[in-house]
Length: 638
Image (tube, rainbow, N blue to C red; front, top):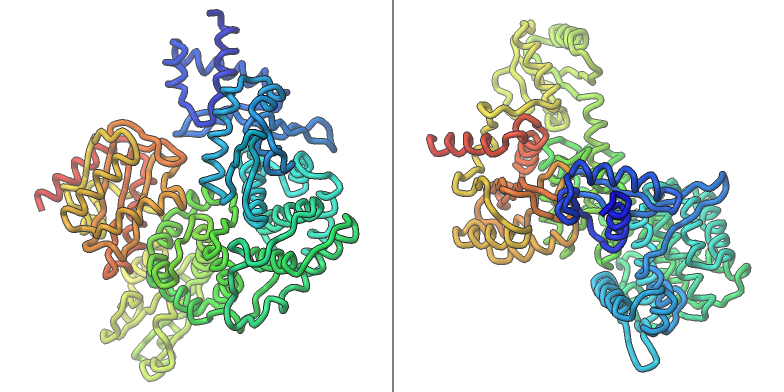
């Protein structure tokens, strides 16, 4: 086989598969060296760019063929959407047509058997992500479902295409207009864009693009169905059935925006709409924060409990952060409604948030268990990522100006001397106050990052005892305490005692030979159940959480876990698999399973931080097996 023929076959092969594939696998499939495959891929990349395709590469995962926007000139974009399944879904969902195998075979220039395979894949996709069904008779195959279910399926279809074409990552909302025009009437898309963006601007809504995209997606689908004279039924479909809080006596209080959006579109596109349509759009506006729920309809106690609980778990006092409270008062109510309705708020930055703020993300993910039980909800990764942004911002604000209280038993003059010395020696901005012993009753010590005291009687985690005149040792201790959140490298001989406390040598597995994720989870959780570390419900809960979001990282590490409610005894399972296995998005060979019982929930931040210290240490990851051997020996030797 000539190099040209081989490259052509590799290209055609990549077009037929939907999943990622490694260069090693291609090397074996085509019986050539890995270097040859890399050279072939470089040549293929150069030759396919103009056709709208590119070779997508992801570290630790592999490669696959993907399509993208090509800038033909300054004003026009081309979208390559030749995938057969996309075309079939377009005919079934968007165009609402009845299709036959024979007709699709002729239109798409493939065999009937290929079409049947495509239809089976489409059935699986629709069954997994929507409530509509494919119904076949002698006349052909069509989509069936309630109107609200069909609209949900259309919203999913748009999101599915955007994500798989990587349009959102590469384009802004204006560029996505070209995508919508590929499937929907161009005038309709222009009208939807003009009206919605005008509404956002006039209502001073400072929203992230993903909220606007979610609303735009629903709005375009709604206008599309109304033009086709497809109207919502009474009391059909989960969104229309959902009741808002008792404090909101009627949804009419919040329907001004949706009436405006539908009325303006109706005048330009000539369709009629009912009160059901107004309610439908109103609820999506609330879910995506284009309509704000009034403060009196927000559960203030829940917000305060959330801040208090996560403050304790993150080991940083955010209870007095009024900006955080205000942000959560606006964010949490629509978040809860999205979760109750199982509506996914598409957040394109989830993986970036996991990578940049992994410790905070996974700490919140573990600590949120108590609210999942309290609210009977399952938090997905998108919502946890949004909470991570709010709490990480609050943490950064806290870090910017640490609050220090100086307590001195020798009077005001000596206190002021200590304050002045601290302001001169601390190499970053701090907010310092002083107090005498008599004034202490008027201060809440928990509000301060550090209490520097010359008094022996004061006790607490944030209290640092110093000498009256601050010697050199005192100064170093103060600066080290204030800088304790900075990164440090965890060496093998200095494993943090926090981590060691939760390790069991019997659950440190080195060079295990699990063939896939399911086999690993089944084996480990059954062993944990037999050893009474977990309850039976933990296993199902962990598996369900894996469906809600990815627990794997690009570094080849996965951190799966279940609800702490079902943990009897805290422990961290560490596994180094002999070969990499496909987890969710990445191929991984290092697995940490943190089991945190309810009584240890406040230690989550320390545990997660130590895990991240490990997985961010390149020296340790380079020879992870040897590191684990040393840890096991240390544990066995006491």
